[in-house]
Length: 261
Ligand SMILES: NC(=O)c1ccc[n+]([C@@H]2O[C@H](COP(=O)([O-])OP(=O)(O)OC[C@H]3O[C@@H](n4cnc5c(N)ncnc54)[C@H](OP(=O)(O)O)[C@@H]3O)[C@@H](O)[C@H]2O)c1
Image (cartoon, rainbow, N blue to C red; front, side):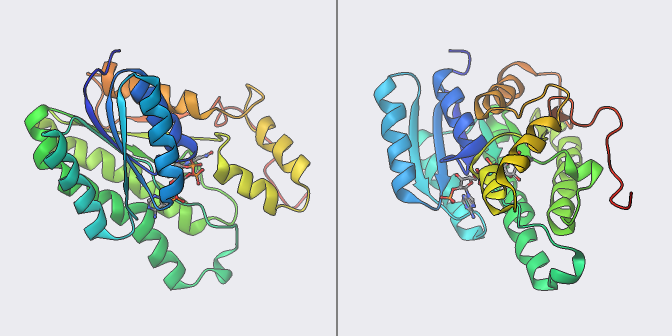
């Protein structure tokens, strides 16, 4: 119960990494408020967590690409629970892979709104409350934001910006005792990853390649992602502006990278 009664907002909490955070934080005693667009999935997870009797979960429908909905999520949380201790900005999307010729400028603008502007807006709305509790922010970035990825210019740009933004905000907010960190997953097995498997010409091979991208020989789990976020929120009190890698070593050593030979 090492995050008991801490008021924690998790965006995109119904599936994948966000779901892992909801489960792990509630298990540690936190009062979790989570959002997504699909209400049925939100209420199902809310009921399951609340039946367990550790911590609590409250689902609020919110599309983070709409700034007024993000502001309302934070306002409703503070109105109902009185304060805010932690904000986990997790909701985001990886579009299908294409060369730059096949992404429109509007595609890029739309993804910036969803993956990046939403985080700016959430931080801006939450900070007046986080300064009162000396709380913390965790932004979900990606390993590819620092190493690049084939046919993913728009996504990689949003993620590189999330890591950079987190460092700049950490510098500003240190004066108030608020920590700001990012988490960069490599391959964590989630519904988003399964979508990529299903869309590929050889799904079994794509899954095997996903596992083999790590020296550890497997993808991460959503629980492992939740545990890293709980460590940052509850224990890593001397870390701010840090990009925490959650990668199983995917960034280590040489691999087969040329597509020419
Ligand atoms: N999985 C990986 O290997 C990996 C690697 C690097 C980075 N990441 C990052 O980690 C984060 C989570 O990824 P994931 O793999 O867990 O994704 P996922 O399996 O697709 O789950 C995404 C969650 O976010 C919600 N969501 C999506 N769009 C939203 C919106 N506009 N407003 C509110 N909620 C929204 C989804 O619910 P609804 O659809 O109902 O809204 C769902 O709960 C993303 O930022 C992703 O870029 C993941």
